[in-house]
Length: 330
Image (cartoon, rainbow, N blue to C red; front, top):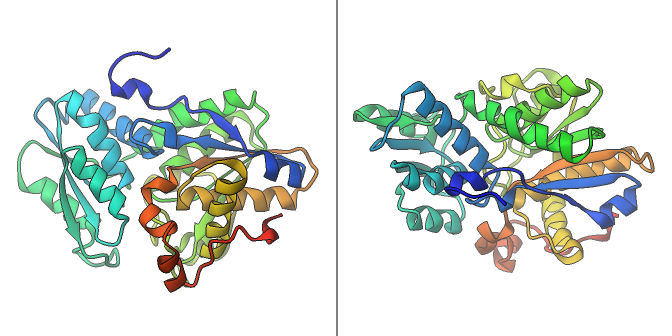
């Protein structure tokens, strides 16, 4: 049993076998249950890694304010860990995220600044706003999860080794979406060092440019997505560390169908990025049907963090989405 402050609960999450999809594909499909971290998401690893690195380098000390621009989960991770370590949090978020994230941040005592959702090129983007706010006053530290390499290093040091150990070194493929690039970079580098033949596949929502970039070298996007915290239109310092073999796009309907499928057939209430990850892992398994390959993906957070959207029939109807776990999945 692990004991200590809340940071002791970050990581060492279980691998959950998705039995019905494994049976249907003849592969072993596992999801790493990151929603079991103290702050409820994979971003707790990023938050802890950034905090530990900043403490070690002397960039923060008791009384410092952690500043971050985030779609929500990294801010929640920082706020979850901050209080016990003597820090406060100033979190900048776009105004189109789930209400549940805003409520959690406020409950954790973070100062919340909401800005209009806009392209990265706009200086009012949450990323740029966070950077300016961090520079305005002394004793503020910009976590800068997109460019701070402590992000990917946290996954290289923890997530990757855990997957290798939990699969007894028999992992054949790792599939994940990209928000900052930290998870796929840290995990892919570790797994490729252990076994260069491990297949690394990026799962991209529409509205993101990474799929096209990896296929053609041009950063272009089409469409939009209701997913939160994944999909970008630039190469971050963290993403540049990744070792990726292939990329696929997943539609919102495929993601929503998988979200409801996992809830109704597996008892897994996962969020939008996790459902997208599982669909991409399922697609890989179908391409390698009956090969007995071991496929691992990330269950980033819980559907309960998005319930005002994904469990609202009217919201889905307005987006042209059906909550039915369609049979085409199998």
